Image (cartoon, rainbow, N blue to C red):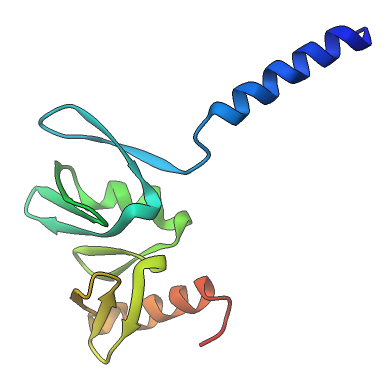
Length: 131
């Protein structure tokens, strides 16, 4: 490979990378179509029957899907269950009270007794062991 050819290929690759959105996102299938949702905008996901409500910084999005699909998908991105039906973005946790998790929007989510220790362990890991 000559220098000029290598330089042109490298420049093309760098240009492509600079135009890509580096933020992590998921795609949601809604009644209206496919929606791109940035992970950092999700405050929590709540199961309601056969539907999920994605509570975000700007809106609430309703999707027909099982919560387990998103638990598996988002656990590596610092999401964890605070009860059987609520998956919380740890970056959006403002406070933990005795039986509640308070999110950045002020919502109090029930912290079940069975999920309390695993939730606090995950929060501690997310915060770098500072609690």
